[in-house]
Length: 256
Image (cartoon, rainbow, N blue to C red; front, side, top):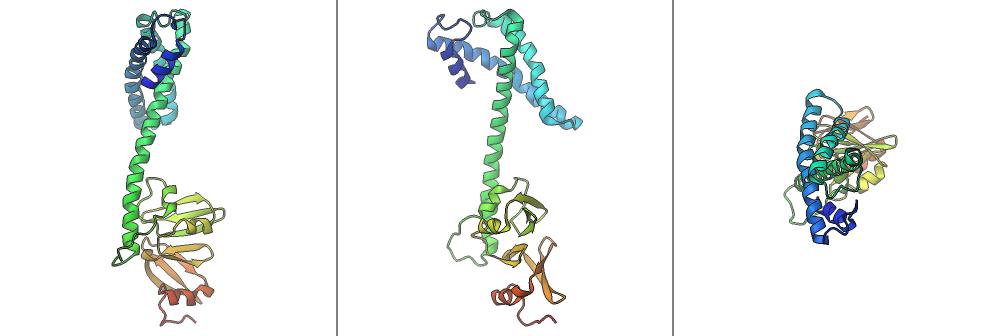
């Protein structure tokens, strides 16, 4: 709100440019805009709570609620901002400006919430990436690996390390410990973004992390790999020998 006060104070709208110095105009506008913040911010919190309790669309409830709040804000400004708003046509002229200010408060609030959300998600991502590296390198060798870039594409609600990637048309399904998410990208690009996590492409539509393997079972003339989350990944017949050499599949058992 201080930044907005500086901008409006510098512009000196509604005939206030010559009334005071730049510092004085900024101080006056800061008091008015902070008053708007103190009125609108609790209303936004209340509208969020109302949307959660009634299962109504949160964005719509908040937006239209802020529009309604701008009306009493104009009344308050009409009484305490007579000098700053004397160039406007009374209450009717104040309404558009109070609406703009109330929506600016909503924008600042949503931006701050989004920034806080990203910071928390980033911290959680760093912790989970470190755990993922520890799981993918048994015993540890003291050498750090680059983080999996793909992990940053997933929502904060995605739990645990990435277990596998599965191609579905133009999408890649990212399997985790307690669910999966779809990303609009090619499988080969997703595999490239998993650099730093040991894994193998076991089928033209599947890549699995080594630490995600629970067991491997014969399936007809090939194999299937069971992941720790219970998902089953098919193994291409022409990949069996390579995977046996890599230690993904048991080498002592041959499938007829």
